Length: 230
Image (tube, rainbow, N blue to C red; front, side, top):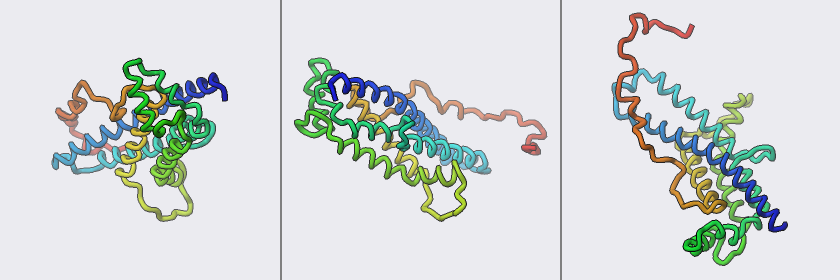
C-alpha cells in the first residue's frame, strides 16, 4: 500500500474514532450519574422505599448501557464500532507508522512521541504490529461477550430456549465501559497524538447533584396516591 493510501486509511480511522468516542463518552456519563444517584440512595434510608423508581432507573440504565456495549463490540462490516476499528487497524497495521505518529508532535515533543510509540508498538518498531490491535480486540470481545449475549437473548429478542446463564451484573457492565474508555484513549493518542488523558470522562464545572437538593414534589395533590397508569 502506498504512502498516500496509508494516509487515507488513517484519516478514515480518525473519523471512525470520533463517532466511537462520542458513544463511549455517553456510556461514561451514564455510569457516572448512575453511580452518583446510587450513592445518594444508599446514604439516605428515607428514600430507599418504595423502590419502584430505583428499580425502573436501574433497568433502563442496564438496558441502555448493555446495548451501547454491544454496539461497540459489533464486528459486522457495515457498522462503525470500536471492534471494527481494531480489526481494520490490525488488517492494515503497516499504515500506522512511527513517522506518521511522531509527525503530529511539535519538534520539542518528538522524543516523547517516539517513547510513546515504543510503549504501544514495541521498541524500535517502525510500524504498528498487527498483534497489538488484535490483542485489544480480543480483550474487548472477551469482556463484552456475556453482555452481548444478554442483549441478543433477553433484550433485543426473547430466547425461546430459556437457558440459564451466569447473570450479568452492573459491575460487569461498568468494567466493560472502563475497558472501552481506556482503549479509546490509547487509540486517540496513537492516531491523533493528543495529550495523554486518564479518561474521556469530563470534569464538571458545575454541581450536577444540585437537582437533588430540594424536594421534587412540594405539595402533593390530594389524590396523588390513588393515581394509576390507566
